[in-house]
Length: 413
Image 1 (cartoon, rainbow, N blue to C red):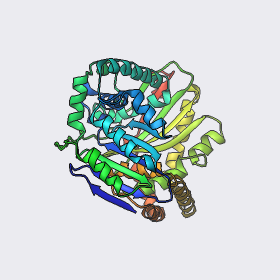
Image 2 (cartoon, rainbow, N blue to C red):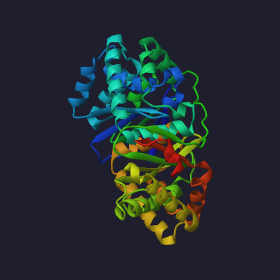
Image 3 (cartoon, one colour):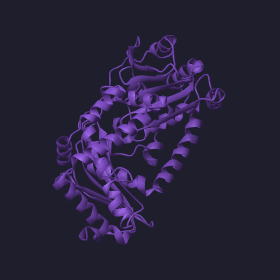
């Protein structure tokens, strides 16, 4: 059962009490990511995520890390295209410590020039590590291709040029603009008492951050194609299609369809292309949903000489599922698998906190486990057929390749 509160300054709170636990997970969510950045600010959201761990006006970076480590807790954060999350997991008796540290990091960061220079170099290393991971590069290239020059298509990490332009003053100005009571939310899951809400009010609700909300720029899927030559062993392919947006309730039918088509070791793509033919090591399909847009992507990594054949086999599977859709047995089996996965994942308070917080910050309805399971149960052969037709539209097809191949590859695909 979820509890909903609104703090004095307008920050929203969603909480789920699980009394039999001895821990509590707390997340601070900000509706701000790389999609909210101007071109010259690219990477700012992720840079801020790093910098708040570098110390506050009352705590050093070591103080922050040691305080949580000393009680056996966890403290972390991550940045996406549409939001940033800072979270803790501690014993329920250490809830005030967790709330204190999270609020201190977000409202009193030091942002010293010396720390900023050090952390900038850390992010440069992260960018280098990313560039050495063609599986990541090809996904970002796909986003860049379909969303063109819109912020949604830019890298979360930013570039060396944009990061070099960041100063303590520009970072503080960005936070003042984007970290507001309208863009922030708190999610809690685990064992807590009414006292926790008083702590949230004291540490978060008392902050003067009631400013106008900054909305993200709209993005529209535009089909195309892209190739980035890279001197590596494998060719990495994304076959992208326009997907559904984050608010679309057809997601449950999409998950059932993709459970059969491309998600997991029993999927058609994995069984027919990897297991039976051994042409790839990794192949799968997934969906990236955002506010107002989405992308369905099929990924495969293979020897360059197998690229043409693998593309042909993927096309064969797409045409097969478009023509035949799913059988009633396939739908029922996929539903049971999804329900099992959902139930197992919900045994973690941290996962429950993440799911509720993500839904709240994106403006989605937060479903109870019973409601979510009923949504899966409601999927039918007809609803999966409808979403297959919507997602696998040939006119939105966008092939993206990273690897040791040249432009002549387009003549063979």
